[in-house]
Amino acid sequence: MDMNKIRSKLADELEMPDNVVSNNFDIRIQGNKRVIIENHVGVLIYENDIIHIKTKIQNIVIKGDKLKIGEITDFYIIVNGEIKEIQIKE
Image (cartoon, rainbow, N blue to C red):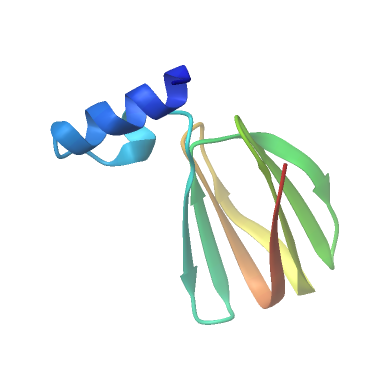
C-alpha cells in the first residue's frame, strides 16, 4: 500500500478531510462560474481560455471563456469565468 493510501485511510479513521493529511486535492465546482481547488502546488498554464493547475498527484485543466484566477494562496486557487470543461490528468 503506498503512502498516500495510508494517509487517506488515516484521515478517514480520524474523521478529517482527506486532503489535510494526504497528497489528494479537493475540487469544488459552483455552477459553471467558479472552481475552487485545494491542495495545489502551482499554475502551469494561465490563459484566457485555459488554466492548467498542478497538484501533487494529478493535474487539473480548466477550459472555458474569460477565465481568471480570482484568488490564489498556498492552499487553494479560485478560478472564475465561464467554465466549459474540467479535465483531471495523470
